[in-house]
Length: 294
Image (cartoon, rainbow, N blue to C red; front, side):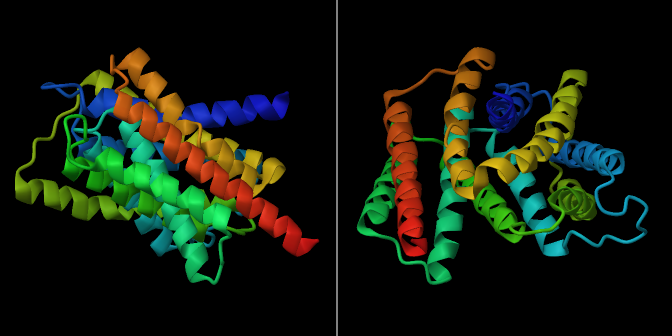
């Protein structure tokens, strides 16, 4: 029961990132905060929270004068994920954004596995084809299709998060590495700020917008990632991937409750096909792996 509770809290935290982002950035004609400021505050508050967690848990060397567990490549992927995520939610609804994000995360990780020589079974290909076809249908032009630029940005965010996840596999101290990567990502805020100044983009933040950004960074990102590492040690990567399929559904429910967003038939059907297709592919891969071991 304790594991189920922690896992549920983690998935809610992941979905809450989408809800908080949409509440802060996509509030109609009067957003509470601009995307660049939301990204910056999210990364800064996440870095501070993770640094405190590292110090409290004794993970790695809290007094180390140099970053030793993270990498600049991972920090760049983290930064790209956060910034593209924020700008995408200017125009995307909560559930659609989360669905595109996690579909692209899975596609990135599956694509890397293929590049590394993995050979899916027929059932795996069926699941992947179903999920990919439903994803294309979701973002294709039509009355209820999402904004194409926002959808493309969320796809970039998902690819970046998939790359970040791949780079973090097998690290001996993932909490310390994540804290280091969050700290390194702050260096990329300088070119982001320069871009905002050069383009003359609007910069503003209400008190509520600042609170939402801090909660997204410190709680649903920082603490959420820490809980996720604890869960993964007990349920494994395959089960973890399956569990994450609940995030877009939770996010869509959160969008309905907190942002007054509705469910379209297109979103409902494509969600079921994408999540079901990916679930079939993951379960088929698990069965294939067990046969190879046996």
